[in-house]
Image (cartoon, rainbow, N blue to C red; front, side, top):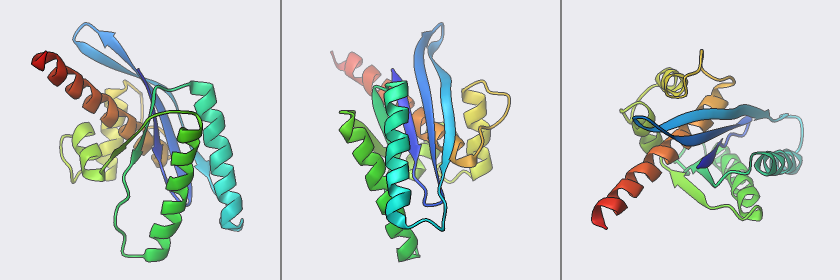
Length: 170
């Protein structure tokens, strides 16, 4: 299974692609690609959204994932920031839908729990565990790329758990 994780951001939207491969001791996670789409603040919002859509569409075509995983909407004190983030998230969901890909959404606490084992983990703890789980020498940069990989890892772990539960019921 190939999972494309997206960490939506109004300054930088991170992406991360992992493969879930069978291994001796269960599934093995392999990093395929990661990066960040940096947005220029001086550009009008519609232009930034068009850029994100075009880049994500190209990346989805290139990597051909089985599923796209994104972080669920969270509540923010700053309504303007939350609205901008919602626009970016909508464009990411649209890019996935236009490719005919299923989308899985996860709460921030769920993502941190799946990667670190603790829902209130700090950002550096998540980045450290992403590097460990994917056997990388260091945490991916920018930090948004590491977050996107964490979202993809969360989906991989969740899918494995659901698969095992289905097998035990059968």
